[in-house]
Image (cartoon, rainbow, N blue to C red; front, top):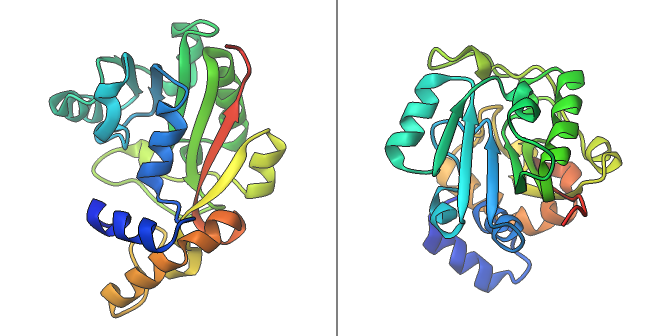
Amino acid sequence: MPGSSRTRAALARLLPDFHDYPDELEKAICGSCRTVLDVGCGAGSPIRPFAARLERTVGVDSWEPSIERSRAKGIHSEYRLMDVREVHAAFGDGAFDGVLLLDVLEHLPESEGLALLADCERIARRRVVVFTPNGFLAQGDFHGNPHQAHVSGWSVPRLRDLGFDVVGMNGWKPLRTSHGAIAWRPEAFWRHVSRLTQPIVARNPERAFQLLCVKDVGRA
């Protein structure tokens, strides 16, 4: 996955159009949102580095051990243990500036994912941010969490049809395994190659390993 902040900063200087996931996620959220609902927040949400800059963040997850680990890290100001497919019953229309689905859609059948996206758009005043693999990536249960299995895949055309702007993330897809590890050896060399491919896949997300997708809902 992405390297150190020092490496990212060096790449950004060398490659002005370098798009790094942590930085792009921060820009997508902090540029327009003060309150955020993190649906399927897991144990270590990627908003952790900048969550304190937001006025209110609520983490929702259906797996209690993940909630407890996240709480111990102090990532969110509030938590709800609940089925993520029922968020609209708990939060009304326009309840948050932004709603996040980071590594969530792929864990739901497509029909349920589409319903959740619609619910998130109702909850969001300003934007919905999605992060998901590019297409289907096989993954089973792990760490005792049955919700970790992948059951659907989301393509660039599909997400664009749903109204999202899509940016490719984490380099050229063939360089990684389904769990995100570098697939080729020596690992250090191919990790650098992956980073160097990032500006290309950012503009050509069909070739990327993962997708960062942003949709402005125009409610604010």
